[in-house]
Length: 160
Image (cartoon, rainbow, N blue to C red; front, side):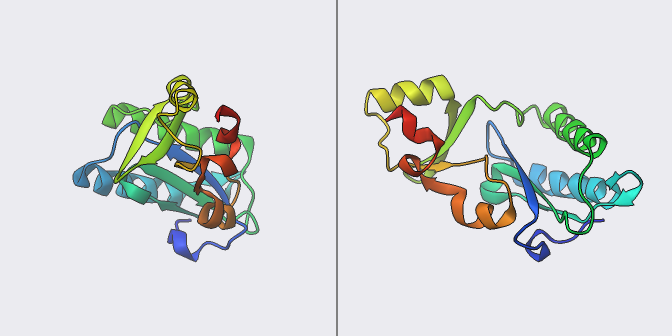
């Protein structure tokens, strides 16, 4: 069952999918509609899942799940990944490639390969205080407080 993302409790599990590029306003509208439809019918072993979606910076898809109502099962997680794969095909974007880094670059958000980020860090083309998006956060509370952090405070610190 779909619920607004901001109504999910802090302990809700989150999955973050960074896009290789920003979404257009029409894509955002379409993604939101498709996601709300998917989440409205998303289940685990026949039980409704209470979930919401956030689309920050026109660049990320964040799915939140209130596991105190019902936990996700392997099959329900698989169905959410298939949903994300459908969005990848529909909008010609990559959302599932974990070998990328998304970070703030002045007034924009950059998305580059991990190899390129490592190289830029080594050459001091990116500093350890650059704000990175830590897409490994586990729940909504971490998403709200630890998602956007200086690289030196995240797993990216090893590259500096």
